[in-house]
Image (cartoon, rainbow, N blue to C red; front, side, top):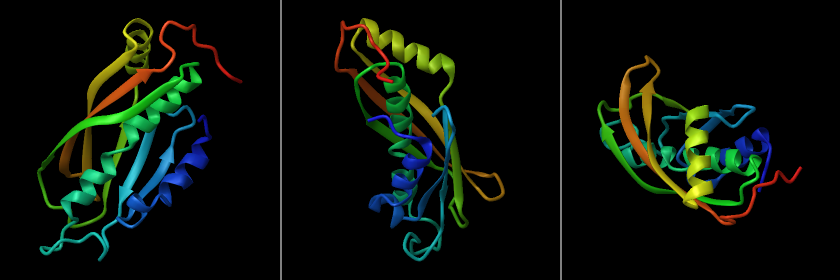
Length: 161
């Protein structure tokens, strides 16, 4: 389903798995090429040593590449199914303050996915994410592997609006 950036931002802000972990979408760019997220530190996601629970950090990174690629491909006329296929995380420094990350999808990434969807019917690739604290210090790195399936392989994509 194609939706606006503002609608998706508010849906994700109040999506229970993110909301109760204090994962707050700050912004989806107008062209769905980037997304900024804040992981707020609170008593709901603090571990025994006072830093943000690692599972919260991991969960925060889960949906965003898939959401961006889903919206980008649909706007190019593809009917797709997109999900996170796998992920790995490296914790580098405890998150003792709010944490932040921004992911960006480049034109080259979109072109690569489009070509694979047209020729192979699917696209699988891992992309990096960096989670930083208020001071800009790197606290964790994540690799998210997304899977995109062209549900109408062989058909010519047409934009529905």
